[in-house]
Length: 444
Image (cartoon, rainbow, N blue to C red):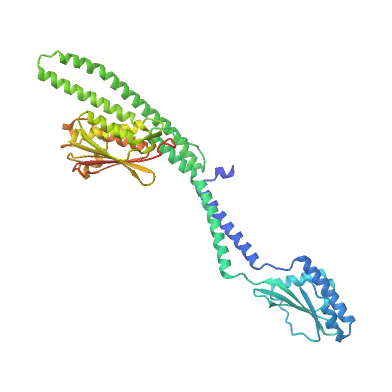
């Protein structure tokens, strides 16, 4: 519950503190590993007892027999010897681990507490290890010396230590990134819901994460409902108005047929036909974002059918592409896109060529080219806006409501595709539509 109340800044600070704490704990563990002791507690106890026994044996034996008898007491990695004098120097005062060992030996064999005990380290016969070397002074001034090998491992190779530190850093960064990912996941979900709302769908909004994000999500959920409600109301109103306009248009068409002047009658018929085309285009634009289930179809068959339909209406049109191109798309939307692009080209050009091709990243490219006047590069962005009819050859004289390209753009974006305008090899306009072969899988 306390974490739920923690804000974004607090959570980021928590991630940083956790990363620093993990790094510190890992470095301490590595340091302990580098200074690890190889003699276990039980062995130290046995060595202490063996040293106490060696002291008693040496004192009970004649000096010339002491060496042989002490050699017989060797074991647990320890060798024993007797010498009249010793040059072994005690380093336990300056080496913490030797001081700790002295305390452990005295604890295991209390008889050693009152004796001079010298401890030092020497390289082992085996490279990379160190032996423990020591001497105990007897009551007569002579010494029992001992050697335990190996006692300590040599410091690990620098390359190995560096590799372990790099692995530690990688582990800490991985955990920190996982925590950051969990921190920003609510923002990604909110962005996905915003994209869905922009396409007219209701995105799932879950109020989770830091308090700031939860407040934004709650406000956005309320705004989403208001926005989608307003869009639905406007769509229903537009559809109702368009439907109601058809009745007076038909009455005007009947009355115009009764006019004696053929010129006036033809002019009125043309105006009424243009009104009907405008209504149909407007309804098509409104409905172009409606949901349609994606399914596996042959895009090549859809393109061939659309080209044949345009040819039947008198268009000089051809197409190039594979015999089959299976893709999981919204077939009605693809057909609507192609129909609008071909119809747009028919109004402005004499020759049309449609091309279908595979594209990288599991996509396909649909291109509609014509030999018309084209669109200047600085006007192409404007041409994609709804209800925009450009001046000139591709303008008002060609008819239409200025929605052909806008309908195609809206349908393409609903399928996570992209529509661009360019220059055609025929000298006119080229409209290129790139679509994924598996669009709509996630409900887009």
